[in-house]
Amino acid sequence: MSEDDRFLNPYNFVRYLTEGKEDDRPEIKLLGRCAPPPHDRFVGLTGRIECELEAVTPIFVSNSEFVYKDSREHKSYEFFKLMDKNGQKNFAIPSTTLRGILRSVFEAATNSCFSIFDGGVLGKRERPENYDRTTNLIAGLILETPKSKDRPGQVKEMTSYQLPHRDFPRYRNMFQLNGTKILVKITNRKVIDVKEFNEENSEGYVEGYLKTSDKGIPGQTQKRNEYVFVDHGSSTNYELSYDTYQNYIIANRNNRQDDTKYPKPGHTIWFRPEKNQKKVKEFGYAQIYRKPFSKSIGELLPEEFHPCTDYDNLCQACRVFGWVYQNPPKDLEKKVAYAGRVKISHAKITENEDPPLEFTLAILSIPKPTTAYFYLLRNGKEEFSVKYDTDKAQLRGRKFYRHQEEAEKQEYKREVKDQQNRTIRDALKSGAKFQFTVEFDNLAPVELGALLWAIKLEDGMYHKLGLAKPLGFGSVKISILSIRKLDIKERYSSYAKEVLKEIPDEKTTEWIDSFKQAMRDKYGKPFEELDNIQDLKAILSKPPSDLYVNYPRTLKPGRNFEWFQQNEKYGKIPLKIAAEDTEGFPY
Image 1 (cartoon, rainbow, N blue to C red):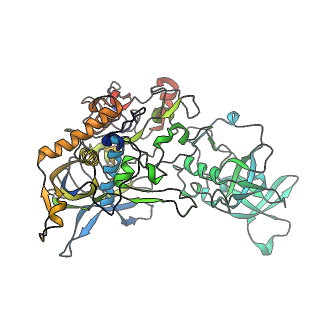
Image 2: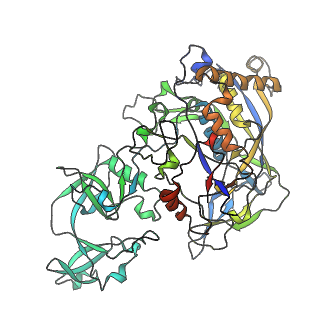
């Protein structure tokens, strides 16, 4: 690998379509929002699809019930298995995994809602001078966390003191001690002594709560202070709203420490209040906390793509795969769920010639949505300077991992075992085959066509499933072995056990073509030229042959963060739209 080599980011986004045409034709209406059909009568196509799934790169689907952890907190996982009729456990892929990958493609292809979507406010650590200086930074102790929008939490105002410098080394980087009760002796607004909490020997001392934190950011100025919070009898409490609390969780979902992801009663925090109000505006565990953006994620996504909330106005994917209201209303008469019309079985292994692999994975990165030039567009175009607060900023679309022709061992293996990575005990090599069934009920021809397209994809396109997708794992090809359709008349006029009739390939092609034509009629372009389809093809097909696919990094191993620092300082290169991303990034 040289300085002239370039790479593709392991993920990109499938754009959503706007300005679809309204039309009274049933097939066009079914590509928009409407009420779902009933389950108590036959009004559409019903049948079964037999499918074969073949791994084209190594795959690993974890059985989360079997996790092994050593003394270094390093975890090992086994492949998901099912017990057969002979009592033997065999490799399998759970139906939930299959359902997830098929629904995600179906949603993207049909321009459905974002069924899994956190629309809260993200935040990013800023330089100290960029924080609101018109309100004070206050030390606080969480008394109660919010239960709902009608039941806010409470934060008690505390007084903060720096720990004495002689005691600082004992608590530096000791995050696990955060919130621990200690005894402190205070003279002239300074802590002069610290000792462990012991009510029997506390004369001259007051009760305090340690405010300690984790290691700082590599390459940044090292911390010089840790604190202790003391309650001096103030009766001032601040309201912690449900929205503020949830926004914190969304903005901090990738925190390294689990305790800081979900604040709890008894935790010490720094916060700023709303002006002239006893309400928490923003808060964090450090003084330089993630500052919330003024716009939420939800504000950057058109309302029509937010998760469905109305039974009589469900999107295509929610009507086919099922729907549950994420925040059900108090109105008990309102419908809050709809059973999907697609049932998917577990996939059972049918062929596996090579012995399973066991090795320790490389470190998998975590999503970085605050890297806005990866996640956002401005006015439909990529822009390096775009932020969540930028005018006309918008979400790029739905995140998908790229297909890679081959998983390279130097990319996915790591010798060191620690908390940052994991060991997989029995990954399957390419060539492993599975079979599963998809049962469908009451689908209109255009819906069945969309489902068939989402299963088969186009030639040269592959689904991605399981663990380590950005490292080249998880590319699979799904083939349709047969389609059988229920003959309603014969079912109720015959004693035959099998009333599913084989459907010829021409009929399958006809259903898929009906979906493509309906998409063309609704959005005004040939199916292959639609933005969402172009992006899907680009991400799920073979990448340009002269480009690697890997996380952003420099030529120095183990210092990936430097790539982002250098890009923000010198390169200023945004992630290109998936269909146009043919040059990649420089190392």
